[in-house]
Amino acid sequence: MKLLIQIARILTGLVFAFSGFVKGIDPMGTAFKLGDYFSAFRFGFLDDFTLPLSLLLCVVEFVTGMMLLSGALLKPASWMAAIFMAIFTPLTLILAIWNPVSDCGCFGDAIVLTNWQTFFKNVIIIIPVVFVFITRNDETGVMPVKAGLNFTLAFIFLFLLFMRINLAYLPVIDFRPYSIGTNIAEGMAVPNDAVPDKYDIRFIYEKDGVQQEFTLENYPADDTLWKFIDQKSVLISKGYEPPIHGFTLMTEQGVDMTEQVTRQNGDVMLMVARRLDESDRDGLMKGYSLGIELQKRGTDFHILTATSPAEAGPLVTGFSTLYADEITLKTIIRSDPGFVLLHNGTVAAKWSYHNLPDPEKFMDGDLNALALRSRIVAENRLIAICAVMSVLLAVALTLPFRMKKTIENNR
Image (cartoon, helix red, strand yellow):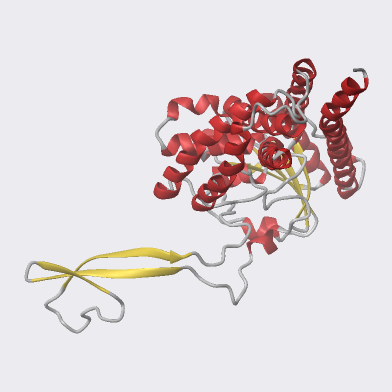
C-alpha cells in the first residue's frame, strides 16, 4: 500500500512539476494563451492581468508538483492538486465541446494537445490525484513541517527567478517554429505529396419555395428551375500544415517582401515591435541606435510591426518597415521589442532588448561570431539553472528519509 502511495505521489508530482516548468520556460506565451481564453469567453476586463495570472499559474503547478515529489507540506499539496483538477477537468470538457481556442496550452509549446486530448489526459491524471488526496494523512516520506516550509519557499523563490530570467532574456528553450537554426523559407515549404484539407461541401438550392442541400455529385447543374441560394463547407480532416505559416511581410504600399527577406544571402537584422506605441521605450531606442549603425555597415535592417502604417509613421522614419500579423510577431519572439538575426534566411540569433549587445559589438566583425557567443551564454545559463534545480530536488527527495533514519537512530 505504501508503495502505491509513493508511486501515485511521484506520478502526480511529475505531471504538475513538468506542466509548471514548461509553462515557466515561456510565461509570456502562457499569458498570451490566457488572453485568448479571456477573449473567447468575453472576459476582456482581465487582459491587464494575463501576465500576473500566468506567473501564478506556473508557480502553483510547479511548486505543487515539487511538494508532492519531495514530501514537503504534503497535505496542502494534496489539496492544491485536487482543487486544481476539480476546476480544470470540467473546464477542459467545456473547451473540448465548444472549442473556442484550438490549443489548450497546458504544456506550453513543448507538447501541443487538442482540447479533447487535454480532457482525456485530465481524466487519466485525476485517478492518481484522487488517490493522493485520500491518502494525504499517510506520513511515508513526508518532511517535518519546518523543513517542508523552507523547501517550499526555496522552490517558489528559485522558480520565480527562473521565470524572471525567461521573461528578461527570452525562453531558455525555444519550442516555437522560429527557434535558432531554423530556415524560415524551408519551414514555410509544403511538400508536393502533402495531404490537403478535406471539406464536406454542400450547395443549397431552392425550387418552388423549397430549399434542399446537394453535394458535388448530385447538385442540379442542368435543371434551371433550381435557384442557387448558398454554399457551406465543413472541415472533415486537417491536412498538412507547415511548421511556419502565416509569415507574410508587407510594405506600406502592399508589396510582399517575404521572399526577399527570407531568401536573401548574407545577414538581415529584424527588430520586432508588435505595437510601437506599447513597446518598451528604452528597447526601441536601443533598436534605433543599432539600426543606424547596421545601415552604416551595409547590413539590412527592418522593423517588423503590426502597427498600422498611419500610426507607425513618425516612429519608423528613416528605417525600412514591414508589416505583419501580430500573432505571428508574438510567435517569432516574445520580447517587445525583440531582435532576430537572419543569415541566408536561417535564424542565427535572437535577443531581448534587455540583453541586446551594444551597437559597437555589431561593428567589430563577423555577426555570426557574435551570434555564436550569444548562444553559448544562453546555453550556460540553461545549464546553471538546471543544475541548481536538480541539486535542490535531489536533496528534497532524500531529506525526509534521512531525517526519519536519524530520528530512529536517536531513540
